[in-house]
Image (cartoon, rainbow, N blue to C red; front, top):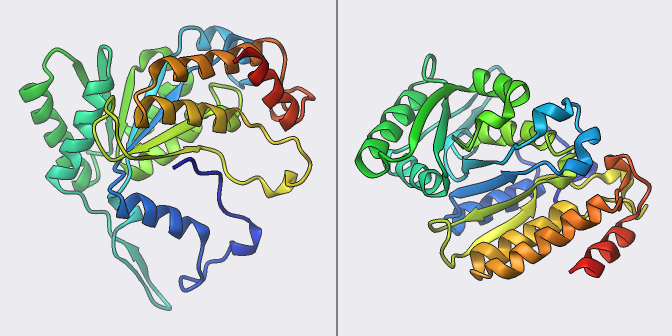
Length: 282
């Protein structure tokens, strides 16, 4: 599935009984067991000026956030009355093992497992399970454990440090949006939500990381690069079409280098103009 952004102001409410589009998205992930969310972050040189980080910090950055997608606090039991509210954060050994295995298989040299083991019991389980799996199945890959606050700081101070960031659901949601700013805009980041080990033909849901941007609806200036790059991930993981995926990614890079930039990237190109620039290079 190739999915566009969902949400909008008319659904913004704190009423727990009111329907929200995000509920449908969470149901898709859970119902299809799409437990592995993969978000590659590769800043393009032409967009160095669009990022709030200094250009020299972005050189050579090529990382992947691997986020567990069907467990944790987003899916735990939710309780609320007039005076109290609670959200259960729950993980099993099996859930941690399968997402960790995906991260290790994607890694070139290092997996940074992110947790809050100094405070949270679920994070202590996470750290123990990841460590056991590493020593048993992937000893050739370096493993480091990092607290989520330290990981957030290092992402902007030394992003080249990271190869694969392995995170639970909520931490990955936050850190991947932070990592998007390395590319210059949230509109540049694709994602793949997979139900099987990465690298095989597998069912999945592919979507840009950004939201629906209702403030620019109908203006023809939305950044389509995140969606186009998500389509490249669909080619790579759902169809094992690596050559076609690389061709689309190369066309996107070429269009960016040629200056086909939407306003969020500091340019003046519209959505259709960007699409034509990519097609011309494809």
